[in-house]
Each structure stands twice: as structure tokens, then as C-alpha cells.
Length: 517
Ligand code: XMP
Image (cartoon, rainbow, N blue to C red; front, side, top):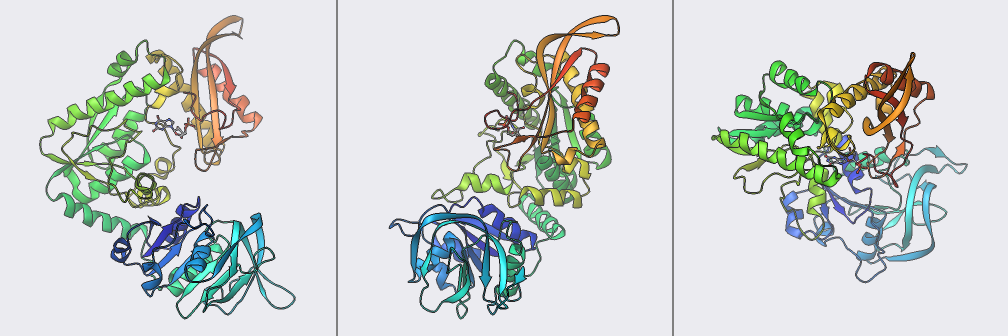
């Protein structure tokens, strides 16, 4: 296993993902973690991440001393290299200008880390690497015992190593794909230098999780709130393999799901896989609770609270249940742990379910706690879930409740479901679904005039939304082809009785959000 010490770089999670893609387990600890936790993790190598601070400041974050005392290989990336240099007796200097973007680095080919890894060879026979740089400071003087491993125009010391101690520092970022040979370099460190084997595979992850869950819950029953989303579905499939009938899923049909979604969830889990699923048809309760409510936040609260209420009612009936399963994934854990607070075990204020009651006297089972989203998807497919389901766009917990603007009514939900379904169908048919990150229809409760045949129509409006994004924090509206958009408006207006106009949302995030409410 590889330990990554986080200094706050936006790329730290990427480092962990790249290492895991190589098939080696890695975890991220904050830089101020206590030394014993590092020893307990028992890593075969340590990577120091980049970070936004300046190693020239007195109170700059530093790597725990134990990192350099364990006698294992250490790779410092960007800030990680700089703090390594500063801590081991070298010097870091502040540049007059930041370097951000592509750079060419001349690599000293003899080092264990970079040997035979190059994008091209220059006239003098030196290997050149195309890399991604993002830094202000740089190493000015290497610590004693270090030799030059790479250099670039802006960073004469772009790489350094003390091979006798297996310490390596690189100024560029191997974890981003812009560094063409980055994967190879990380692979060389993890497998070649640290000697880790590629055992972190979907099959092993599943086998491991099954063992652990069995050990944790024994003969007890486990309850899971199944939403039909990727995380809870993978948990269901995994726990079903681990404990069979002792897993009981509660699936709440809120009336705010997509077309036929409730039946599809039941068909897949209950009928196909034989999972014990209790379906609660709560649409009426939701429509009544939402009657007359127009404020988006108030709607969200009502939807979330009602979920908890219903889930509570159902779980109280299951007197043998001792455990609650949750689809918490690794990014949730990292975010809630953060620096200084240690590895607090918080119940996810699961925006999918609006927060589960804290007085539930159930232990938590979180088999995906160590996994990134892409790993969750990979094991989902390995567990036999259909790819179409596992690679679906995200769907917000409050469902269509935040896609029907203002008051939620059953009539609106029915129209929206039909329009949304047409949009999804055509996106798949035109091979556009996976070219967008999220796409959906929104119901606008405004009436607009239209003509159809000889008749005048005065009906509701549908807005279509499709975005491209990596992290959902910022997004660009998807440039869907005009012909495709035309087809959408034709199909929706012709087929959905009650819709007379279709618009396409061309707002980015920011300033708009992805959802309309
Ligand atoms: P916004 O609208 O904030 O959405 O740009 C960003 C992403 O989050 C999803 N989203 C939610 N997910 N509960 C959820 O589980 C919510 O209340 C919620 N609101 C937004 C949204 O679909 C998008 O993927």
C-alpha cells in the first residue's frame, strides 16, 4: 500500500486514483496526521502531494518526520518536493513568476524513477518529457546527498533524487493526464521502486469487502435505503452476495422518480437478483406534503424529512435489524475528515436521503467507504449490474421535486416524466448520452400559446438541460446539435399532450446552477 500525504493540492485525489488504477491500494492522510497513524498504515512507499502554500514561510505545512525515517521510498510532487528539500537541508526559492501549463523537462535517464521513460530524445541524446507544471516556488539548492534528476528552463532543479535513500522529488505533476508519461512514472515508483503488486482489482475488492461485511454483521439483519442510484445499488448487490437474505432494502417510491423507475428498480433487484426489497409507494404522501409549497429549499426539506419518516417507519418494523448500510464513498470520507479533525466517522448528511436520524440505534455498514466513484462503477459491473445503470448520469435526491418549478403536482410530474424519457431515449440513440455529464428535462409552470393543425393550444413549457462537467462545481452547457434539438422539440410537443413549447437552457455554472431549483 501507498500512503499519500496531502498538502491541499486540487490534484491529491487524482494521485490516489492513478495509483489505484495501477492496481495498488492507496489512502490519503492530511499532512498533520499523527506519526503513529502513518506507522500503523504500514505503507511500502509515501507520496507527498502538491499544495497551495509556500515552503519558504515559517509556518508552512511540513511532512511528519517519520516519513523520512521509515526507510521506505518517498516521492515528493511539486510542493511535496519543495518541503522535502526544505526539511532535508536544501533551499526553496520563490520565483518571480508562476509557471502554469505545459513544459518540456530534460530527464537524467540513469535514475531508477525516470530511466527509459521519455517522450523524445533531443540532439544531444537526452530524454525529454512533456509535463504539466503548476508552481510559484522552486527548489534552489538540493539537500546534501541529492543529485539532479530533471531540469527545465524555468526550473533548473525540476527533479532530484537521493537514490541511496530512495527519495525522489519532481516539480511537475505526473498525476494529471497532461503529463503524457505520468502514469508510467507513478507506476515505476509504486511497482518498480516500492515493489507493490497490482492486487487492487475489482475481484479482490469484492472478495475483501464480502469477508469484512460478513465478519462485521455476523447473523444480524442489515437495512439499506435503496434509491436506484449507483452507490446504493452497488451496496445492495455487494451485500446481497455477502449476506443474502439478511439484507433488507427499503425502496421509497416518492412519485418524483423518472418514468417507470420504480418498476425498473424492483425488476432488477427483487425479481432478477432475488434481493429482499420492500417497496413503499409513497407518491400520494409526497404530493400531499408538497401541496402549495413553492420555495425550493422548503421543498427539499419536506422531501428529505418525509424520506426519513418513511424509512424510520419501515425500519421500526424490522426488529432484528442491527445495522444500517450506506453508500458512503471515499471522497465523502476525505471531505468530512479534513485536516486537524482526524478521521472522524460521521454519518453522511446524505443529501440523497436528506439526513438520517441520529438516534437510530443501528451500526453503520459502509462497504464503499474506501472507493472512488470509478471504482464503485467497476465493481458494480463486476457484480453483474447493467452498465446502463452503473454509468447513468447523477440524479438528485429530491428527484423531480426540484425539476418541477414551484409547486409540485402529480399532473406536472407525469408530463415531465414523459418529456424527460423522450430526451433520454434520443440521447442514447444518437450516442450523445455519454458525451454529456448530466442531462434532463425541467417542467416550467407557465403557459404558452401554440398552434397544432387548425387548433390553438395553450399549454405548459419544457426546458431541456444538458451540461458537460468534470466535478459538477462548474459546468458548460452541452453543444447539442441543432438537428437533435429540433427533433426533441418535435417529439416532445407532438407526443406529450399538455406541452406546447420546448426551450434549451444555455446557462453555464456559474452563474447558473445545474438544476433549476
Ligand atoms: P447544482 O444544481 O447545485 O447541482 O449545480 C450540482 C449537482 O448536484 C446535484 N444536486 C443534488 N443532489 N440532492 C442531491 O442528491 C440535492 O438536493 C441536489 N441538488 C443538486 C445536481 O443534480 C448536480 O448533479
